[in-house]
Amino acid sequence: MKKLLLFSFTFIGFASQAQTWSDDVASIFYAKCAQCHHAGGISTTPLTTYSEVNPITTAIASYVTNDKMPPWPPNNSYQQYSHNRALSSTDKTTILNWITNGAPEGNAANTPPLPVFPTGSLLGPGDLEVQIPKYMSKAQVGADDYVCFSVPTGLASGKKIKSVEVIPGNRAIVHHALIFLDPNGSEVTDTIGGNCSSPSNQNTKLIAGYTPGSSPLTLPCNDPLKLGISMPAGSHIYFNMHYPAGSFGEYDSTKVIFHFYPDNETGIREVFASDLIQNWNFTLPANQVTTVSGQYGPTTSEFSLLSVFPHQHLLGKTMKSFGVTAAHDTLPFIELPQWDFHWQDFYFFKHIIHLPTGTTLKGIGTYDNTTNNLDNPHNPPITVYPGLNTTDEMFIFYYHYMVYQTGDENYDMEALMNAGLKDIPLNKESIISVAPNPFNESTSISFPSKNGDHLTVYIYDTQGNVINKLCSNSVVNSDKVTINWDGTSTEGTSVHKGLYFVSINLNGALYTQRIIRN
Image (cartoon, rainbow, N blue to C red; front, side, top):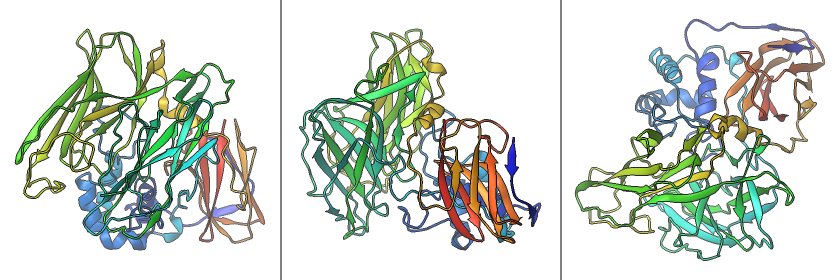
């Protein structure tokens, strides 16, 4: 790992043997918790400083022990996904040991700089913005608000989507947003009753979603893999919005930014988004736990599976989807040991899954229609049937997929999706200069300083993970700092192409800048 610091400094302070907030724990909270738990985020409990975390360590220990936070429903031992937000076993052990030993702060000067929490667009201006009208949440205490908006795109000709970014108009109250593509304009806006949760037409397809801490949908868009989703002329965008209980009176105007391929772009492989598995013929008797299943296939040709999105409503208990090949091999897609209606997302596989000809896609779900289910909207329980409202039930698995080509299963989807983050506007007001930017082999990070300044410089990815600690708690002895970053991680491995952030703590003041590696 090469790292040239063109200024003189001395390190001050040393990490003690015991785990501390500053040296060991803060970085975990930044990567796994702070995307939601920061000022202006969806959570009302910020967790970015020692003074915020220390008073509630008992509650934190309970959440961590029981895998309640951070919210990551999939069973990672069943399948691996890109942009995994779950705590690793090492992370959990570090946090719990730290709390058991009294949760010491350590040397406050060693606390790393915060990652970047974008207040606007991460991908920058796109080719099309579609925005819902200004809306006031009607979610009283104890009751959430679910509403739907149908908004025309105004497209005069068809386009190929390469990325989709959902920008909440009010991050503090947008719990989740599901974005559907309605090619025929058949959906209607529904803001009455607070229980609209799904489209009414089978041709309206879910293409992207937003939950706090999630990333924009960035399909691989460079050789060797260019993927796109077709948006026909005259399409509408159908927003399914969820505003949490207690947000009554707050306003929101969420928008979606689409980035398209140039009209003359060639070599784009079509990605389809469809609810291949669905069941609309089941009954959930009161005071019972019921199992529901569905399947699709067998397939008549080979396909490549990119993602899976399971969907139930408030009675959901578990969900599982897998494939069975003609040779009776099982292909695991997703297993949710505990369904959570409040945390829904597309889960993109770490590597594309090859579906041979003759594969049958299967899904299984259980529903708890008893008083033991604290989310049951009916007390006492009543018989529930399939339907579109939140108080009805659904059994659906959405997928992104495409026609198979030899070698698809060898692609690293996380790396290729990160590489799709390009043409990102820089923060022109930052004191940090990065050149060249974008870069291939190495880049120089420069900013003004003065003798005696205390400095920490970290590189983060878009998920808030620490990529490289370029310097930690150093004392500057010059009037300018220049640090060369060679595009490697702290462990010395070369990082993937894509978007990164340099975050600087200079005498307690935080500065950031975006860096693109080509």
